[in-house]
Image (cartoon, rainbow over all chains, first blue to last red; front, side):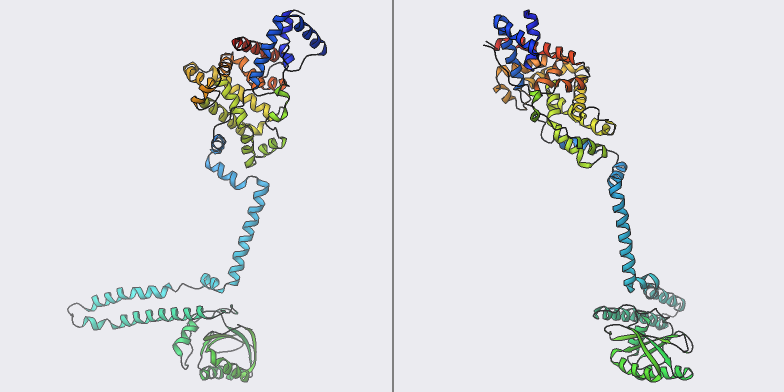
Length: 306
Length: 196
């Protein structure tokens, strides 16, 4: 083996890649050649020094900067990726969430009569609008009537002023009743539909204004009952008399009470037992649904059967 | 008396960044934390290779970041024929060599020399404290031809196996061996004054 051949094997020796034959030949040469032995010593020291160099460390925050740079993609694509990827996981979850929320909304809608009424009933803003329009109307009347009659002008206004007063009073009354109903414990669920409240009871006893307002409030029936009268011919008059006697208000959905019609009766809570007793005298009266507790003004839906 | 060397760094598995096969699959599936795992696992190795090749921390960070961004963009096209680490080192080596060949590179030679002497340490004071031999070593590495420098950096500074280096640099094994041997011999000659 020549010195050139021996030195060509230095790297293979460092890396442990020599064959047995090469190893024997190289070691024999290094034993006999001082120059090559010295070169080997220097070579191995150099490689050892290289191996001793520590790995440099990336600067602080490097990984965060890379991740941030990698995340800089157009926002629509990023949004889509965040919403849908991985598709097999997120899509079923999102579908389930939509179904769950929809079910919850339908359930709440069905269980909450206030929501149903809000969706069906015309807003009470009409009254407020009337009230707010009153001053303008009043001013118009004043203007029309007041030319050259400066002294009489204030007296020409009373009708609109009364109208306004009445409307405001109506609003206040409804607010007061609503507050009362809110304050009443365990407001009963709706047990029936609503009736047209424009037809008021003919005549009734005190407290008339509150009862009328309660009838107009179109809240849920606190009791729903079925009445099979002994006599249909006299029912209208008898029922009217009974309601009047117990101090309630009768609201009817037809000109005359007859089979298939529904009447609404509003009575003070204390008067209900007397009403029920009276109804049982009028015919076969059955309570179909009933709230656990009654508020001050009890709204009763009465179905008339043959 | 002949000097015996410890086993090569290339055969010490604990010295290597993990090449988790599950990581490649997770990256392909686009799992959000997979890329983060990759960066955390390889950031020092990739940065270190770039620093030893370029000699400038700023350049090294730019290249290292570009390496990861390229992986992020093209991981879905990674066929898995080579190891993930080999692919990373191939991208790193190619980007470093391209940058070294870029026009205007020589203007930063003074800055690069400082970084080499500093052994990658951000504090110049620490560089002054480093031994003259270590400084000479880094200077000698920096003065190697780029083709030789990359094999020394991958093999002797970072302990990669011959096969992995050959795959990363797309070199025949014999070419790699002879190139590495010539690089080591050149370094030995540059450092001769330090040896008895």
